[in-house]
Image 1: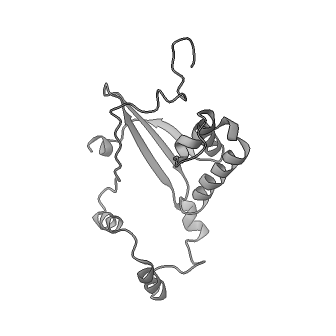
Image 2: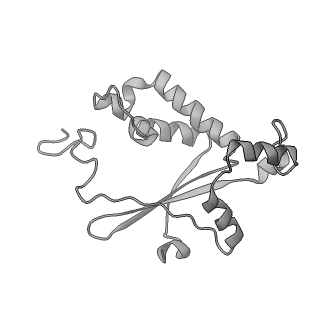
Image 3: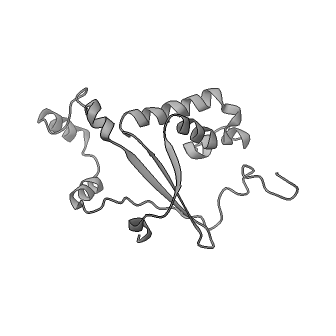
Length: 165
């Protein structure tokens, strides 16, 4: 508990409301071909091997060049809406998600577990097992480590194309 009568955000009483809902959307702009390809998902392993042999997919070690990766980036936008209709928009962004940034997320998560276990939300709640998302288990500790590693977290205005969804 915080001050007298106040709930502490990690005591379990403020985790989710009874009306909590969740959904995901992907904004692709005008590229319908990309949307169709993403909706199909990855082909089976045998088909991917055929595609590699035919030169349609890169073989191991033939990934994108350093120059290509330097031009890549990702940006995720999260929109939260309260029961009263108030919206909060936050973005997470960084460089190439396929190599450098994925390594940051994995490495910083491992370092948080190894070096800051006692500060983690899951530890503070006394959770010792089960399946937890990185955001729930590692919380502010991981966010701080990622920020230091160059991942950007920003509060934003709701982009026009998303406000229409």
